[in-house]
Length: 296
Image 1 (cartoon, rainbow, N blue to C red):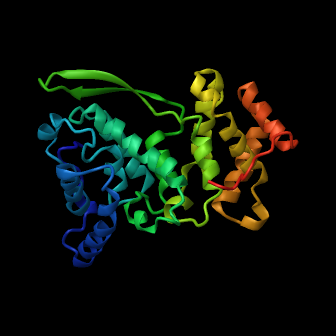
Image 2 (tube, one colour):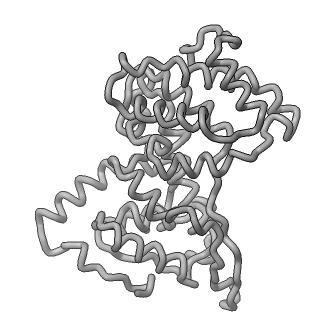
Image 3 (cartoon, rainbow, N blue to C red):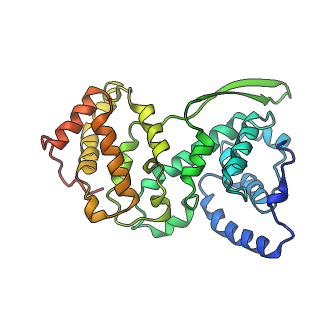
């Protein structure tokens, strides 16, 4: 397969019902792109979504816009098929192609991971008008994580691109790591007054993304990295307090309950930096008290 001309048989453009449904779905998707995409980048994405038409890669190569267009995430998310094997093949073909640019890969991972973590933790109950502009994958975050990130056994890829002079440029691409401080956002997720579709598909509730978080942060000496990090200790105390005291019985069989059970087990049984591990033990034994723990 070449990214110049992909298999468009998945786009049933001669089926009126399929086309009508696709157009209706675009009306939902387009507002979600207000933040990450604009201008001709969004136009290229629309053509891909509705017709399977690929961008003019040569023209876009020199387009100095960090938002990019049909980046790796858009390419997979907006494909008509949800067959995992098909999407893995498409992912591999995209990353092996030399007609894209480095930022088409980098931006794709960035949009997906930020939407599935930080943005998925926000409470939209007081700003419902923002929800149509919140990018979500309609419950496909876990699948897309597996496709994009693989099984985490390989974290570095050697990619090859065409540069502006049409010579070949080789660059290493490291799969993104999770941040230590995402735990603060997740603890706020536990305080949400209501849960929207984007909240219900928060990535770290799933096993593989949670392993990704742990492998990213387990050896990070976070509080000693800089003075600013030291000042965040009360926020981590509050985050761990929320995790320990979250009422799973009252919550019931939900994504938040499942997450809390998993993260408690990880905090209990696995290694972290001593300061963070001791903080967790102090929360459990009541040595740490938190004022207004459920206030965001």
